[in-house]
Image (cartoon, rainbow over all chains, first blue to last red; front, side, top):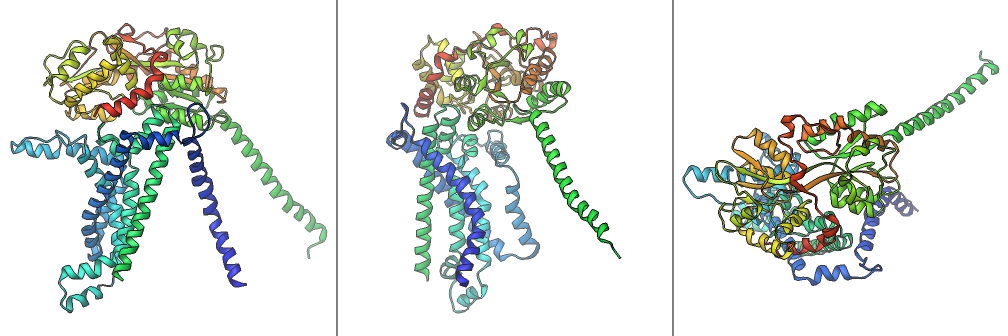
Length: 278
Length: 350
């Protein structure tokens, strides 16, 4: 009797969340699928999907979107891991200061942060101002993938750092010390002890950063140009300028499926890595 | 000792008090609902526009109805999408739309035709400001896309649009020029205007866009981004809206603004009453179009307004683009081409 009662109470607790998801997530999603299947002369079909996946330009935009998100995730991991390590290994006011450093940007709107980077990267900005002071030629850094990349890495860094830091903090330092005592070099201790045990945090961080980056819109629009087209900007254009809802819905679905598939692959790789380390 | 007879009234009171509370609560809800029915939601653009909407339009509405409207800052695309989302019970009652969205909203049956018997100030708005919209919307104020330039860098700004375009292609200004993109909300109108300079040829205009691209710092999409590029001297020439351009030039001695020949296209904000919106919405529309509020609005945002009874003071008149210098786009002729223009822009202008 007990397990049944337990199941019933669990279901009761889950019910609000499940109903909320059905009404506010699955429902609109199904509606979106229906809109994406609408065809010009009436009726339903796959015309919008064929347009999105059959035209070389839209395929290029789709690939650009994936590559941008992957690069942002890679560089966020590259810069975020050492920062997370520093947070996990520091104590007292230093730890507080590092956490403050990484959390503070989250309190500032992404638009403001993006405009901040415009000031830094602009022709009269900090970098070019310094170059000019040394009589060096200035560089046009705005309006391209570099500017978008650096801004997105900055915007996404806290999500990666916080995910990894929490995993690193859970690692018993005695394990690392034991390895060092037994003659392992620090690099080996990292390779065989710290990295495998922090994989959960890395996977969470990369999943978060990848899914947020692939959907990022404001930063790409402000820092990019016509060459740096990605799917979220394309969806915005189709909705607000072309007023082509079915095509916008189809592009949205392509984006969603892409995120789901890549996240699934990331999780599978993570699982395999963990199994390999075990 | 407490008698039974003493308990009964107490019990009755105990039953009566919750009932009274429920009744009062219901009454309160009813009153709140009634007040909410009078409450309307309107739209404004951000910055000084929002201030003007509060000082000129909302103040007039409060004077007439005793109630403050809720003012939302939204762009045209968001407005039309919100109205589409709930046609029976719209969350926006008086819409501020781009010209093309206003035509689309009228065609889709999202708006009520403007009615001078309900908003009498409409009688003083010339027909030219309503005709293309079939009276589903009226221009509230208009501006024009003109040229801003850095006086320190550009000693002789080109007198006309064609020279500006040819000089940009020739690289005369380096890559420090910014034009609006076709994908900017008023980009299709600008493209239409350029076609009028090139014998109506879209192909020629797109060829010019493509030829200019290497010397364009950015084809801008976001107005705030555009003015920031100019303010930080990222670009020396910027095609931008007149009111804000003149205002910027007034505050920065190094900046200039002018209308190249043969003029500019009219870029307007459309006012419309949303279908199924409360009747009080007409009061707000009438307020927006009243001579006093219109003059106040023009003084603050530096754009010409549409009520023919408005008389501008000389200092204001000097910074407003005259009507004879602007051409109203023929929206019905090109609006159905917009999706194809956007696709062409995305694919060709890299």
